Length: 70
Image (cartoon, rainbow, N blue to C red; front, side):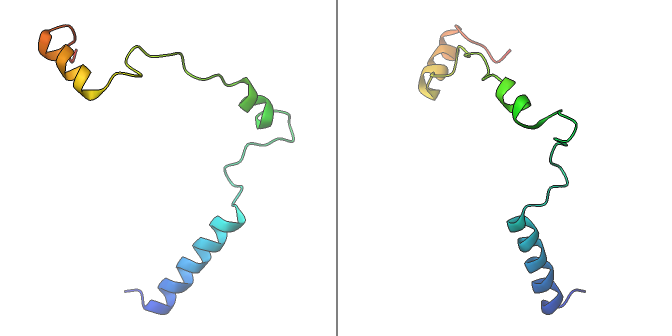
């Protein structure tokens, strides 16, 4: 069982690691892969036909048979 002192110590260590930014999962920029080039090359997803449809409109379309769950 963990006591309060160990729990607070572990929480403080985790908070400090988060605040300082652990770079264990960061891409390796020394080889030129990853980094800003990969982020700038990413494009937003294409528009989806139901992006601006409300729940009420979707329910009405499903009740009328215009749309189905399949």
